[in-house]
Length: 430
Image 1: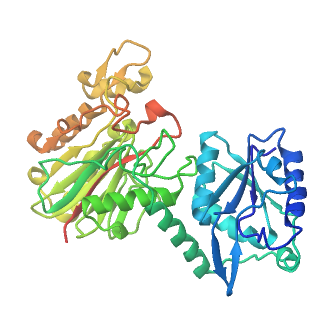
Image 2: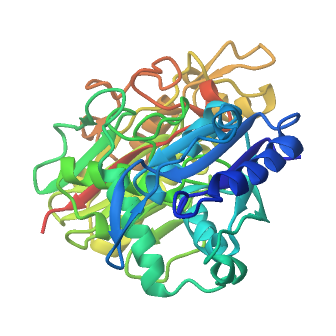
Image 3: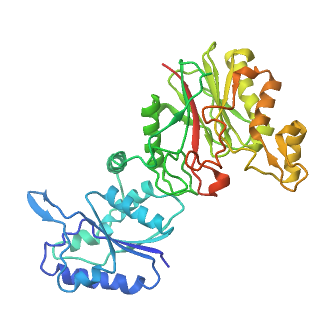
């Protein structure tokens, strides 16, 4: 049984026929009868109360409320917006406020494919949709209502994407201004930084607001993440069309940009100008590497597994092997991550950190010791030959625990499975 029921009346000519209220009343009565008892959200989507020209004739989209329709409409929440993108995004917010995921869409047959195209852009696999034909026709509309259009052309899809992108760009930033943390160790020939959670448009509490990663398990669709990224690129000054995220596997594989891209990897190294590379982080450490002499850079994602597997030094060694970098020239900056105050591992996993250095573990004799992945990363980098003064893991909010600072950072440890993601990024200026 659907948790939410959406009835699509967006393009019906609701005032064009005298029998419209009676026909609509019968249809909505049926929807209300079949779904009101179990659905937690009944919604009607219609266009806003404006008049407009179509084919030289004026259409009026406002709902008439005579003949009993007014009383029935009180059983529904009506979403009335000037565009499909605005309407569906508003409905998505209402669905997410109620934490619903099973949705029935009652839609005219000729609009079903269009509706599905919008839904594919605005929703993720967290949601389960089923579709039902809207059984309402008005005189002159019967043929149109009976024909289902099964194909969206590439041009139509692009128009849908443009409508959505335009709407998302119009939305205000949430939770304050976009903030980027930078390091004085990295010279100005690079663009770099670490993001916080403010200044984006993601509205779901654990993802709000500058979430920069979308997956099938989260409620933020790719279009929202892309808008957040566009705003970040404008603020930082990099080209959003040349942006590459790590494909995390919690391992130590490195992609040398220019070679064939692996299916997954936790580090990237490049000397290409104008290309921005980024490491994800939401407790794991996003690490940025820069060599101002050879003009090369890298990023790495270091969770506790990747830390023990040496992903940081694997990135350094890739820069040395591929671009002729020297250990003494490479600068390494550790972005915000979970601290030893909040991160524990089972005793058997903690032993590997204790063997690396006892200072990486607190309360080692407990069943779940506290782990300092930042200290472990510094130790491994120094042992690998990176100069201690060329490693920054403190100051400028970099050493703040992501779990302890919900106002600044996302955290998997704190927020659970539907967590948001910040990034560390770097590029060589063109």
